[in-house]
Image 1 (cartoon, chains in turn red, yellow):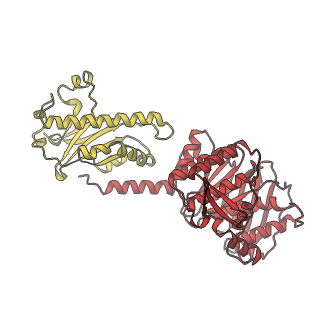
Image 2 (cartoon, rainbow over the protein chains, first blue to last red; image 1 turned 180 degrees about the vertical axis):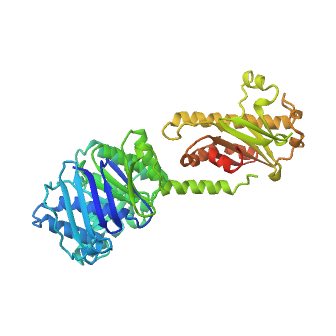
Image 3 (cartoon, one colour; image 1 turned 60 degrees about the horizontal axis):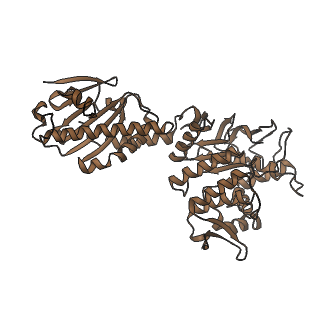
Length: 341
Length: 169
């Protein structure tokens, strides 16, 4: 039940953005403060609310779950602060799934803590979606949980708290999904080791062979890959999951970025849907090559300088964008320092 | 002598004939090419102002570096061989080792004063977005010529940039 389309109006910095015919992997690019992370978090909030609602003994209504998720994800004093500034603006959000169910809601600037979701057929999900922020969470996991769950204060938003909780699920033994096992081997091969939770000492460690290292002295990139590996190993993720990745390039060497994106494609082939926001030349180039080489539709959302969004497809060619343009400008600047007369 | 225009890969190159030549216009070119399999780039230009020698190859197209990687590797191999043979021929002529005597060139090429070399690949109509990776690859493959022939720059440009830098009309 992946996301098929979305339509967001007056959602923070996103004055208007629509996406249709979404793919297994979807890319979001744009300059700083164009709303890339906002879009990821908006879609995550909807998906995660569909997953938390009706789960176990939670008796909250969907409206309550979604209101809470928006409040703790965006951490605005009141939800109305999420509405794009402007007279009479109302935030509107419509997210449609592949099974033609949808979530629709809208609210104005006066809304404080509770929103009302329009009546529509909804399927609550048994699967889990996850938001992977640019920074790793392992070394701060206790602080994040204390801040988010115990003290209930703003600081680490719900995406961080949810991720730390997801990582705490114990590793599952037994046969995993084939592609998950293969992907885990590749992830662990990238840094010749794995991240593990040491129950006896109640802390995360990095294990390489029989050697154990403190998570605090482990490289940021290793922790980042380790998080992904752990979520595949503890079965928090399933082929129906949706993964939102904000800046996969952070803390990773270009070679590792390329390897990670190969693994992401394999997981996408297994069913997982990805939404990736990036500033990286290597990410966009690699995804372009994967789209072309695998004849894969790979929708890309691009914000222009006026913060207007357009949708293109990497399979159709590299669309005009500032990441590639800057690489050309640097190349031309390199030529310009040569003497040509 | 004066300015000559020469069309290659649908681009019109212009240079002073005292300070440039086409290798395929040299006497013995046919023999050199067909019997001895010497590969040549299209132009050699002398840039007296900066004491540089430029070897220029023009192409009307190139395989895509990533979606057609095997063909692209062959393409780069071919370009490297062309630059290699053209550099060898030039220095052999200067040392009077070649069967092509230096006297065939303008006397501006004598005496031997060049202090630096530039290798330039001009690809007509090539998307600017793909020029940097092609330039990076050719740079890597031509590294040894930095030592052997004091190649200071390996440049890959399209027709727009070639026009900007006044290599073509």
